[in-house]
Length: 609
Ligand code: M6R
Image (tube, rainbow, N blue to C red; front, side):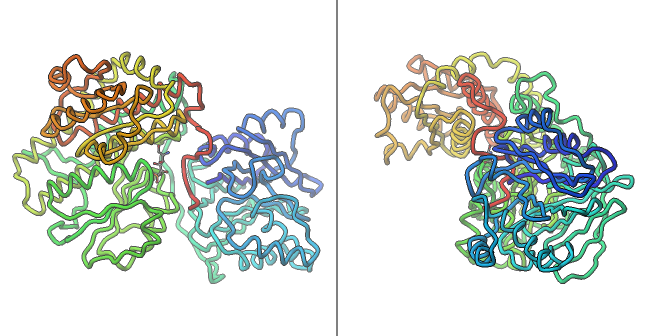
């Protein structure tokens, strides 16, 4: 997590650094800071606890001069989020910002203490500044000192360093956490992601694992992990910058929920070729799923629940066995990878550390590494054999919404292509299913036009301490996602359960204080869901039934709260039922007054394990 920015410019750096940090705040927001080399060569810094606005306020009264600077927005790993622990960390002539974890910092700290260097913070990052400063004290030039420092670090890091007395030097290094170098007119920039640099430049180079970059205003020299001077490709971004605008919505999350019809349409259209009669699914053209005996799907959080839905789809339609796992478990359980397996990694950001580590585990073992990402320039995308973009557009709210439904759309199309390759589905059926999928954006658009009943239910929900989400089949992972959404932004304890598991434990929780949300489209599992509903109502639970008109009618008046959903192709219900659970979480959080877009303790991109 944590966002890094660096500028070697020709204008005062502080305001530009702060603006750029705003675009990186999604990576962490418990404290922030900037440091510059002033014209007389000394390093000065400002740091503040809390959101970036606190740093901005501080700079009004204590401005910072200098045209070269580094900045950081923090998600604390070592040491509580106070000003002392906020980056940049200074030691002697060195100032450092860091994203990642230095795993051997205690050992290094001990060595430094023995050499007379005294840490002043609880952070691992300070060790980097102290080590480098020690090498400078021993007579090494900054570049040499930085090199020697990097050799001693283990763990994952993206680092930017400034040096007192050096107004035209910045050193950056990447090992495990992403960094992009940006090119301006006699100016150079550095950022944790390229989007943070967008208003300044569209010309970008991504550093690769083990790279060390030496930046001056005139350009950059990049050295690989062996110390060889290398030339890394320059990319030109074609994105615009106005996605940081809420467009009249109160929160990014709200905007992103309402953007889903358009996002989905873009995602679906980019993989469907309409020219011929019927539908041609235009993805993974070189891969024939006939040759794939097994698929593994790996992700974290919401993306994992998208994989869970896909497991049901792929096994049912394409008849390929699917194993799913969360990145953090997969990477350490050392599973055997069957020959011919397709390993698929799903990630909105494409930077999630555990998903990336799981991907690296599969390299050389799986037949093909496929990633399904929202950020096509991300590390996960760059390390995959094939990339399927979900085209959701930038997602700023920490709670994932439109990325989830777009991940589902792409996974569904991939499932159809797999079923087609394996002749498990007729062309007529494919054409019909694709046509149903294509009509979803307009169905969802209509649905989003009338959400008043959800608001009322959400306001009641916001007073609960515990909530249960139940579902069967395709609705089970959606129930899991509903519980995650609610807990992360409203801080209400919630659990998702397969409705069939109710009697195996969770029913013990039920009384009149526990709202139960049941996701039950009118399908072959509906009656079973209704039986479960009666069981919890009999124990005085306050039930909300989310179903279609037919389902609500047959459930009868015993259920007090209902949310009516449009009727769709049964296979596509996860894409539709995702909306009410997002809205329930959103309105509950609004009612509680929590920080919807930047909920406590979380960050949008989890780049540490
Ligand atoms: O960027 P990724 O999709 O890899 O992120 C995975 C999770 O961190 C993410 O989905 C997280 O669970 C969201 N905050 C959920 O809303």
